[in-house]
Image: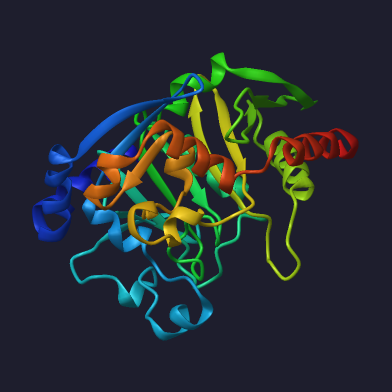
Length: 310
């Protein structure tokens, strides 16, 4: 499968001008580093991501537009690879990563992770040079009406290299799967490490059921990163309480057009506007993370509930 994906990349960049130009433009993307209480974040100025960052996801807007992940609405130049019974691997034409995939369900079903974490594990194992990610319907998904995963090159997200050195403690263990949490005052992060697929699915289900949910919402708010290395899965779950921070809606100098999703939670802030890239500080990053994540008290309650349920 990995060789087939590489061939798909080469073919798409040879034959699809939009994608080719946007991947070439990554070489010109500006980045800077900020430190937030000992955690490294990168800020990326990536104007091509304005489509995603400013996407309207209210029910009326979704109803009025064609679903850009449905097969019949894909660009004529876009090709894909089948994965399993229900998914197609596509080259994302608006990349953040050096290699960036979108993996939609072939059916037009809503963005929900419940019952699909096993699919995410399978993809991560098969594409083990990628990090898989899932954005909840109100946590950065620009197509909340169509189930999809994304994948990006390993080694890009700062969290990948930092998490194992900053564990705050173990919450529970279930057979060959262990759940820990990270020592991070502004970003609530749960980490599952496991060598066994079914144990991982069971432990994730316990986490899922313990997360706070709002009446009328279909699932708890969360982002998920998953990768496979050294014979085990690493699953980072970021419980959320808010979709977009106040600065997204602010006017004038207070405005920062940033809508956090899995990549941002993983340590790389994507700013589609240069003004935001220039002015954003470590304090801005910290405040945005705290605003969209569970508070320390809420996160403690989730950890206690997980202990009680397993």
